[in-house]
Image (cartoon, helix red, strand yellow):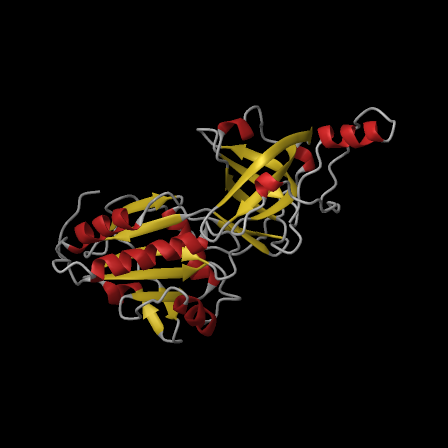
Length: 317
């Protein structure tokens, strides 16, 4: 575990050595960070803490979330661009796009947040070239609520061909994941919430039976059927109720774009936003839930409503 060096600490060490002053250093991506022992107040048996640096790309409304392009975190994850949460608005106050920061990433089994955020410099947007990969995509239009969801072809965790049309008559909850996603608040939280929703529905004696969960990978190169099956087993999934799908990148990109789910690669690392989609029993888009703040109860409520829609219903756009 690591603690960030601050100007205050540097000044203190210099003073002890009979010197004064604190000189800011230029942003050097992936320059080594010297490890320091954690102070007693930050030591925890269930919190892993990492010090790193990055560039602010966006501060979201509310001041509790920032999109940060950060350097590689040794022994945890490679350089990525991620939406990271803070526990207090004080951590992100005064920051803007292009600011270079140091910060601490705290990770538990089911949560992650940043603190000890310090601005150490700034970069011009021209100094932040995009590293997104180029890929061929279909020309698709975003779907509106009430639109019929087109048919797409995938392969499930057993290596079997699966079409969305085969689920017509069932309410669907669709999430997008990849099995090597490192932060517990991203793909693992999506999968855990779906697992909780599955258990809740199974335990409701009056719940409808025409529903199914779909988790679609956004990393088909890695997430082959056997990999998805192993991943699914972590969540005690029921294959009769929950399918994990891979397929052609062209198809995956098309369906994600229609739901507002984006993903891209930077230096071969996947970055993405979060979307959970509800499709009703007639095959029409009922709701898109952005982010990771929803819970299993909300999903169950939406699925029950979606399951009750007649399959021949005409939903006005």
